[in-house]
Length: 383
Picture 1 (cartoon, rainbow, N blue to C red):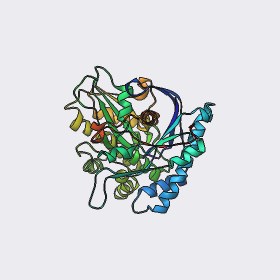
Picture 2 (cartoon, helix red, strand yellow):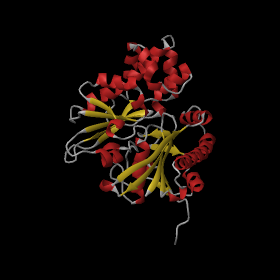
Picture 3 (cartoon, rainbow, N blue to C red):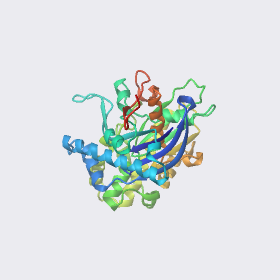
Picture 4 (tube, helix red, strand yellow):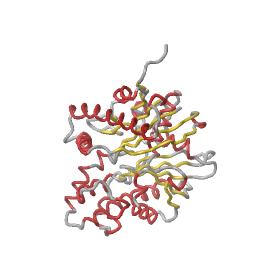
């Protein structure tokens, strides 16, 4: 089968679209990447997403309209990746769309039940492309009393798990998340959770201080000095040492968090701020490994994917913080750091079509494995 996977993450650095050929199911799954690209999210839509994610600025009319607006943008991304490779839309068997997370409430509080919301209307994608769409992957896991995240570990287990090697796969998108794959015959469970911020704070700080959306290659951070007072305050955030299972997102480490931080440390040199928040990402990853993983799991390799893999300063910081591990990127294994999450949703969408579960209950905390995603038909089926 042929499929396009779509991922728009918390970093808002674009819509990842991957065109794949996928065969088999579960342990027999084989994926071949045909093409991958990231398509820009227009600035006005980025601002709408940020407002929609902020309870102080959001509104039902904004989310309602943005749902359809993003659906159109996702559809255009599917058409673009197919056109790029002269691949006919009508050859696609399905589209797997993660959608854009607007709010994620993994734990109930006094006024909210456990819930999650991803938008980017599947009906718009299905109609515009004439292709079946699997979307809304997180909600069934939450219905089964899981946290709805992380979901990527299923594809990692299928595609990366080794017979005799324990591997840590660290994704650094807007948020950082880790999946630990024990050897196949090990009694240890697959463990996955969000380590804390990834690129989110760095990107927002770069936008506010330099007017650019990210620190290209980590060049700005490399020119700065780490402010220990600021770093100590950041590392005192209660999420960092919260015991897994745990998930987080823009509602915790987004624009509001970063603007408040910049206001309190406005007298620091700009490059020192970027260096410090970059180290915050690296150290929050390292502390989680030291506290929750390394005492139990015999990890030797840490393989980084996501946009953070291209930030050389961040990668150097991680290696410095975890000198006992070999820190690598997806590219060193012959894969794409940028395409990893979009491919993951192709794998999960394929399981949905095969009516197979694709949540990892040791990662999400769900009571049982469940089939993820909603199916929206894009074309008439023969009776």
